[in-house]
Length: 144
Picture 1 (tube, helix red, strand yellow):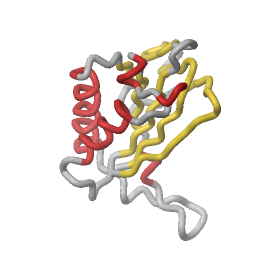
Picture 2 (cartoon, rainbow, N blue to C red; picture 1 turned 180 degrees about the vertical axis):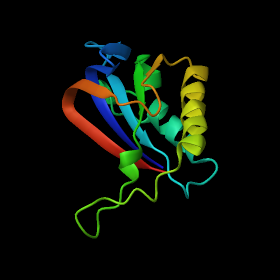
Picture 3 (tube, rainbow, N blue to C red; picture 1 turned 90 degrees about the vertical axis):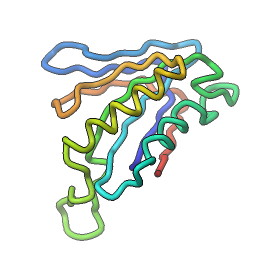
């Protein structure tokens, strides 16, 4: 499993010209979390990713999402699992199929909400337009 966590002032996901998830947090900052679920992920990898999203001290003042009561925009992105070592076309064979990945994404969202974190989401499997205003820019990659 891979996650790209970006500190943002605002971020949104639009599907078919409709905003389906958005965060606006210019003072505290928030996190845009792009998450790719892999076919060979450990069974508890989602727990590590949820914990990292909540606890990594990557917001201003070395605060975490939990410390700052900051929101998270959670977006599934299977393309993070693409392999590009050979050829000119990425291989998606490391990405988990939708029937495996969607429940994992749901677990991550639920775990964050159980920590009283405001979570907005994209729509799994949809063609999404993701917009963000990055702070810093500050982006980290989490692998679990």
